[in-house]
Length: 114
Image (tube, helix red, strand yellow):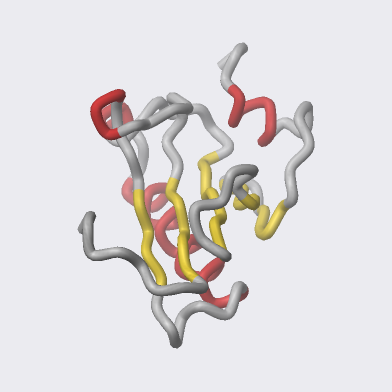
């Protein structure tokens, strides 16, 4: 998508601190981290959100989740615990309309949300 921030990051037009990359997925550090470890995992192909992912293959969506788990391991937060969050739509506070997962950890999480 032409004006999508995450598409531009995936294309290398905007720099990021990459944590993981393959042909389908990119993981990079969030520029406004909400925890000591805060990595975003995105499909390189533009998908606006989970509802729009209905046309994507199960394998592609499963791969996105597996990469989130790999990121948690590479960041050293598997043993202490981590949270994977995905916001979908404005009420959920999705600020970039491109499907993405937040991998958060490195500290105790609050009880306020899931």
